[in-house]
Image (cartoon, rainbow, N blue to C red):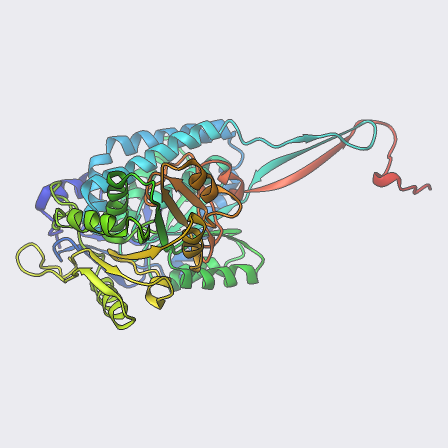
Length: 517
């Protein structure tokens, strides 16, 4: 069997990445083995079969865990700066294969080629961040209340980190976790989305090259493939102290309960229902750029996608007209063609959700101002291409309170001061990303204050979508509370230990307790 992807250099990209027509779905580096059923990966771009991946059976998983736990005993003893050097080499490999991996991301997931390249750049950036971090895994020193004692804290590796990632960022989110976990001394077992398994195979191949070149154990980076049942192998496994899971709120609640039941740790990055507040002092041109990219980028399939535009009544009609005009300029088609703005949804199930959302907003009394539609004909054979839609709605509509993973934007009107807009923004269950468009300093500061946005990300005069790796990424409420990527997010991948050293000949007790023998 051969792969059938031949357009826009995809065949060459697959060859460069070592992705074959049939791939083993369980891997510890170059050692591939699997006894499970096959997953077929079809591209939403053209509906063509890209390749097949074997799923991970329970026996396969046990081999992976044996390799990972064995590798951890070696990896944790390597000094952190040396681990950082390995991550640096991984980043260099990504630079070499950026174009090929970006094309595979675009073709298997459906996002634009530019976004695919951007996702690989995120991987490179987090590697650079992690290399510097490898020399800064610092604790604190504290003064002891007892004379002749020194007290400090330090951080140790956790062990095996289990990573469950979603289809919309098939490589970047894995790297956010993996690069930090590696420099912290952990090893990783990754279950990518069953909708984008070949991206996982490609990343594992790249990592395997680096570890083999440095004579390091393959088990430092492990891959398993399959549906939620394969993910359950890790969530139930006491040998995996941390599960980092990205996906829907429904999935996250299941993972959280399972991991908490065994007193493990969870890092959850879940749903978003993100809003941009547009005040009377907003720059309209800037607002349009931020809102349109936020709403239609990745075909509305980012966790940070803009779902709601909360506009002051005094400028509502002006902003609505500008947004509608901008939508008329959108080009929908093959995401590997860089003249197009919007690619396909991931699959026909996503298309059904898109249609259901538009039907529901009308049923609840909303008004469609930019009609949606499923596109057909030449170039749209996969059945996954839809027109980005805009609907006028009310904040209390059930569909507005719900996250629809598709390019559907709701226009909401507010009156009075900015505090009213903030209240509308905060009344949804999710709390990931938020933004305000204003040139009014008081409004901006109110939005960022204790009484402002309740989201993990709050932006002023930029949209909700897109984040730099230097800052911690994550959200509150039903978004899960996890933090990945920058700042001090590294601490979740380590265990904290407090140490007290007595360098005297006496043994005084804390709090002045007397215990004489």
